[in-house]
Image (tube, rainbow, N blue to C red; front, side, top):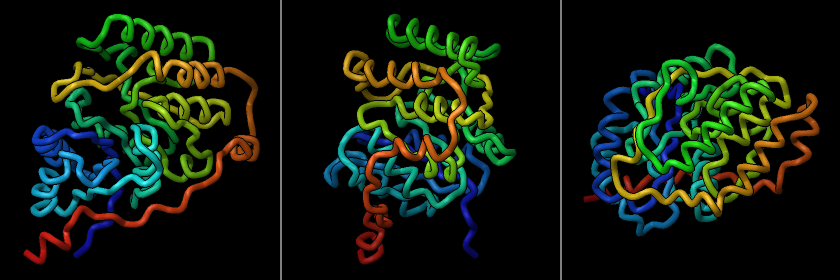
Length: 264
């Protein structure tokens, strides 16, 4: 009997190699809701692929898709959400920094009616362990000021570890094309639409697996754009939708070489 997924876990990957097995083991062990796990890669030769294939052969929840929207984490996340079969999408990283036990809790918040559910490092009970000092300071400052002055519904608008109502995301669209600012963009759009955003505390650990590719200087302009967008009067859905860039073709179902594994 086929079980319909209630949550799609979106993981952008880039040459994670064997370390992806440890990441998937944690997620598949801790996520109890009916789920699919989408590993989104930019190129067929990505070193994540053969290791993910081994896991996919034994666990049908795992599905690896080739991103055709363009390289980079923003495009991978956009492609993953567009590929999601479930009504709820949770974006998490492949580096071990996020707590997979909280995926179910975030998804349940969306199931209860919020459009964005954030795992928050900066609310009471949350914590950030490690990471570059400047990045920590700027992220905390942005999160706190957006919470205090823009009333965005979370103390941690910049964290990528969030759950989304996929209908909401597809309605407002994703304009980000560079880095990990999608979490901030969608939080800001929900705030301008006056749609509900909620949060739970999380303990974020600096990357445990592989090397970070976060480039603060390159991504900063996009973060600032969405930071300032969060402030302002209420917008209608029509005005938000009018901002959307041209919609690319819908992604095809690109399961990772299951056919080849089945044939030998």
